[in-house]
Image (cartoon, rainbow, N blue to C red; front, top):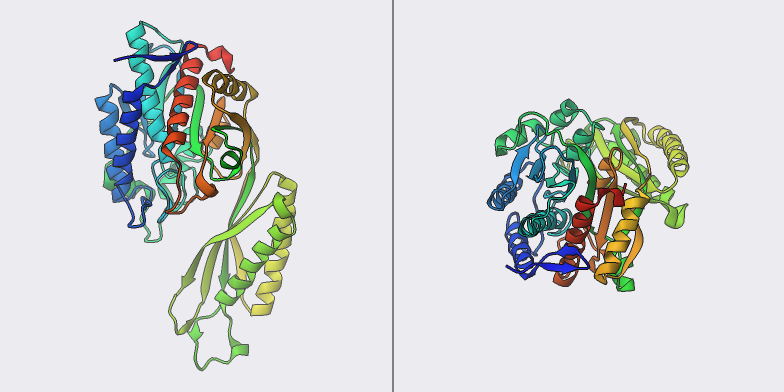
Length: 426
């Protein structure tokens, strides 16, 4: 088998690209939707099936597979048991009726990149300074279980294992039980000496596509304020109950949803907001709802904007509760701070892309990624490849084969440079 090399950077050959395409096609068939998307919630039957596919592929390509207590899957390519690891990865779970690329691309490209490097370096008799690993993080999306970023959060110590295990879905099934049901409740923690972490992801925005660029290097991450708000009213009949006597929790929630949007409208491009989930009780067409919970979020670079938004929303919720004769309670409020990713790794990525002839630029991310969790403890590089029309969390999410191949080439070369010359990014 031939070895592809550009200015001493190892890159994937044609067979590696074919392996990636085959693996991506197999993944896309697990949880596939009729519209060509993906419905593969964390720790579901479908998630268990794609985990089986991933682990089988890793073992067939000389990885050592480990699973930790929160279900994170690590594929290790060890050259020196005393050396640290450069880790890459992302997640295999999806949002409901979403796309095939978000997260999945980073895991599968990472597996193929590490496999390619392991083969090529052994053929060359090359022993790198760092080992390599690929990881699938559990429940990045936060769709079935909250919060998001559970797997990477537990690994970095930002979230306790007990908290993660006790997170329950809408049917009352805990994450611990769900992982046990699909056979991915691992044993003890996976302890790795990590030199650095690389994640490659579809951009979920239009900047790269509109500028006809191949790679984005994330320099900063936006902050996110996520709140769970509950309104309590009184269950009653929707027919005979006089309007003035109704204590309608749904009406209160509707006013709150408008308020969340209005806050973002005050700040233009500096803030995004949404209410992505509403839970109604008893959720019957002939019953005035007695309890409604909503999950609201505000995102911005500026934490002061978010703090001020939270104060205004709290005042507005009091006014809404008074007007609708309901009560409200903020059940949880979590602020994820903004982040700056290390210059050293970003500059290395720019240098590698230049050597490869791939057009590259700096990027920012509004969305959350496991790289954000890892950035709290390790040197991190987060890379983007183009998304068509910036569409994501949608069945029509799409990235071209050419862009995925360019990303695989970039990831492989960057991992090679990082594992052979770790001082280049630290």
